[in-house]
Length: 413
Image (cartoon, rainbow, N blue to C red; front, side, top):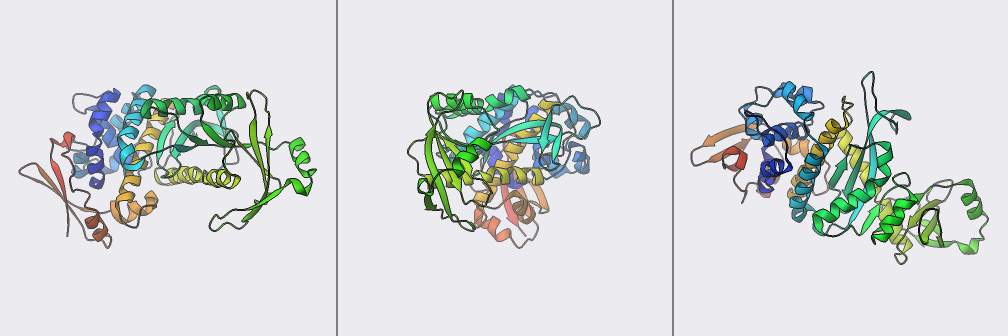
């Protein structure tokens, strides 16, 4: 766990929590409360009730600036005290501070919804289709935005009603403009994320996008009736792809509620029975480029699957959206913590959280508090310790504000 302290202290996590306006108590300040909840994510604990497994662990208490971690009654009660404005402030300031380290020059983002199912007996939640169950169930719909190159999650919102979901794309662009001063250059998302009217507003903001159009019977019939001369063959050099040669028809179309024309690229030969229809408002980008970049959007689905598996994002029992919203915000923070750690470990740049946790984080050791405000962490013997030693995560690490400005040192048996 202490491997993440250099990053948390460098970004000033305690100050970000206080500036976000999170509440605290006399015994447990807000930064300690959030660090205790965040440690659950970093430790792969499924539910807040499992926090009791570490009630007497002084080391995990020290991580949050406490003698021991708070019990589940406090953690559960505290999760109901947050507001959406708190989550927005924390997430925005965290991503802005993180940007020079992991997101330099971020311009393209992939967006997707993820339904988080409710497992209680009664709920007043709306029904959303759950792919894993093959049917619609009471759930909380959450939007996630992932940077296209590094696959770092930089936005999440679970405090959404069905009527608000189509406008979430524009809210994300406003969020990014407020953080960085400019709108994103490219957005990639599927057909169910928003409406044609919202796509028109993206075009007005000069934001390029690529999305999928739903295939109606009339559209497919018209494509089948086209002569072979209308189709152009192109080779897609994507490693491990079975169908490398595809055919396409590139044309301009008009759609209801969209002002102006859109570029539609009908792609055949992808291994599907029917052609895939790509829509984009960029007139000049090559078909090979727009298809390749959109295909990489599948990375957000893979990233969501990783979060569901590793951070137990689906193991929620609350029907209060704000409670779920706090959880997904902490998931965004925990995800970027693991992406930072992987980026510092030679040979693990693209590693998912699970192997990083198994080989580096799940390591025992001793913590010693030395005079002169030195906190020495000695790790037990592991075969991957040389990689940690080479990374020198503690080198130039700033003092930890919530630990009385102690400096951390890593040592190995």
